[in-house]
Length: 110
Length: 113
Image 1 (cartoon, rainbow over the protein chains, first blue to last red):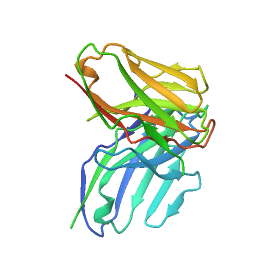
Image 2: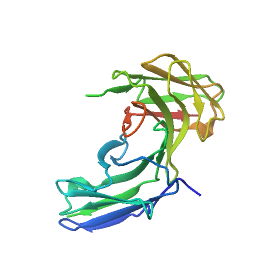
Image 3: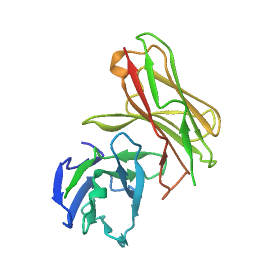
């Protein structure tokens, strides 16, 4: 079983739409959770960390559900510039190893 | 700002050549990582290091070795390059422990012909 699983998509949504991505992880002892964004032919960059209480950064909201072992990312009022691949990342108990989902592709259409 | 740099953005090598990929970080991070990324497979960990001269195998270490002689530098070595090692190689670094995120270099797109 993979450590982290994501729906690869693609998600094609119109500008202004709300879109949500989910990700599940297998190790209940995982400690830290992140969403990264990766543009085509670029390196992944941190979008936001995911905290137990949930957190929001502008149009982006991240949630963690430890009981069900999933994390989510909600993007409101989608912009063309949100088109990218979104990677779910889970850090191991020791903090020294990161597990990546295969990424979810988002295209925002004018 | 954390900066992770990689020695080359694009590299073309022949089958059987020895290939060195260099990665340098400037934030005194203990952990450094090498991944390869292929379409449909996501990022796969090749090796990581949590201290100078320390290394741990990741999920796909076969055909690769690493060297970490200084804290800021982590090298990936392809002893004898093969065509199935054509890929995007990404280096990353992080502080030890939780909840520190990883920072990535720009990647090296390696083609082995």
